[in-house]
Length: 183
Image (tube, rainbow, N blue to C red; front, side, top):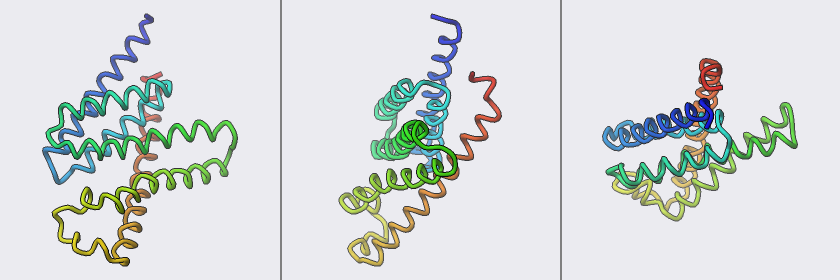
């Protein structure tokens, strides 16, 4: 094994541990569950940026397994699965599109594709498993009303836009600051 590959594997191990720690912290500090889980998923994006895509997929599966075994709240595993899975699919589709499309058209097409990926994950959960999102909340009584469903989908798209923008900024800043360290 080359020295750099050992160093790279050590970095991936540290990032996996940090990702798991963030998700568990999100379970323990319930006010910040989405924030910590989103940060953990952002680390997956960094791994996909600095590693071959196969290593990124293995990293995601390792983090899911660690989260499943170490997280006291098993429902948060699904939150990480959704947020991390979104980033994984977004990065993989970008690599595929980059080979066929370029320039501004690539960015617009990829943004639309990321929205479709989000909606394919969000809408089935919202409509078929609403208790996963709304259980034990005051708004659960409105879940069968059309106005509420429309408002919830709009809120989901707003959440996606904020999450996607934050991820793009995080990735860009990380790459600017640590490009020489990770290469």
